[in-house]
Length: 553
Image (spheres, rainbow, N blue to C red):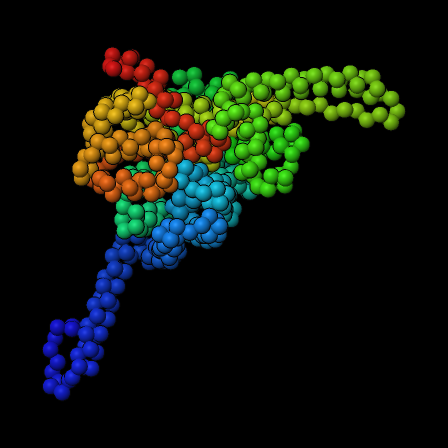
């Protein structure tokens, strides 16, 4: 428009300026309309566009604000206040939008990649299993429409209050007609389109602001889209469960874990029925465990000021290291406490059958096994072993083992056992992919830089320069470990951006992105309980056995 000459010969500088302004405005309007049309098509129509605008209204200003404070090297108190305000605003936005943004908040709560400040982790922790639930009438109508029957025709009882709500649905306890206790997962209507639009919104944001995250998001988007058919999830759950039973890793309370049995004949696209595992979320049990041990040491939460300080103090009570006690040290400590518990109960028993019978005497109480500490180190080791077996031996694994998908059973009996749920994101590796990853794990455990780079290239990694040092660092962070020494004291986000800037990634091994996600999630849990691990070293014995059985090295 600004290039069209004026038809008014009297038009002077002012007219020209107005024409230029009109041209700029017109171009901006056309570009905006074109951008809105693109966004509308890309994120799923009008509702998706509104969700995108709502997300950007918070994400873009806060991203700029964070970058500015990084440039200004702001002091800690400024960062603390910024984290507090932004995490609260972020949680409010997530609760409002829900969808895939809940998953993003869960990643923060789980401290993916050891990347999130404690303030963010604590603020986002309700998302692990406290998402807003839908009214029971909605749930009832979904179940009845899926089966074409009234609810009371299928179930002896069905609890109206959900035991948990997540990003795509919620879970209710129920009893089948034969008396079996089950839980019923019910998917919300329309969530697939919402999720697809949300992932694309975040991907567009990353393409501009954080391109280092784009390649993984492509695989994550593809994998998340498998969650929207509970028939498929029930089959995946059944397959993983059978694999774990065959490996003697799942079953009765003597095994490392329990995985619920799906009732395949009662599973539809939007309803999944499975046996109930009697236990609470791992994070809930760990908090209760911390409180019990603080009471045992006659130390209150108020004395420490916050839960994080309390946790650190408890961890250091019986260890000299910063990384918390080993599983063996925990066992020794627990045995000592159990001996004291038994002695105390024996004394209480003698007192109760003697002095306790006298008039006015008050009988002593007994201390149960649930008072004993939970072996945090053993839990982390067992989670690593279970998922290492799924990836390296079975080639069939859950790609989303965040803390909200892990239960702890048998705490009251003093026999803690892991309960593993939610198999909507199961990834399958071919035999060739599995064996190559075994070799990668061994190379990482041995810190063989040359071998790591060769295997990474074989897996399909491509970058602009194919710089061996950058490739090595990427593999360590993606599959093995993260610590201050490895990241050169930088925040993990800045470290990954540095790697990307040094040698921009063109293609990641898509087949291993979910395995990387498992590694990062379990490492995040380890960091949270002061049990940091090298995943490669934990998985190395499994990988060596797999290759030996296949006649490879």
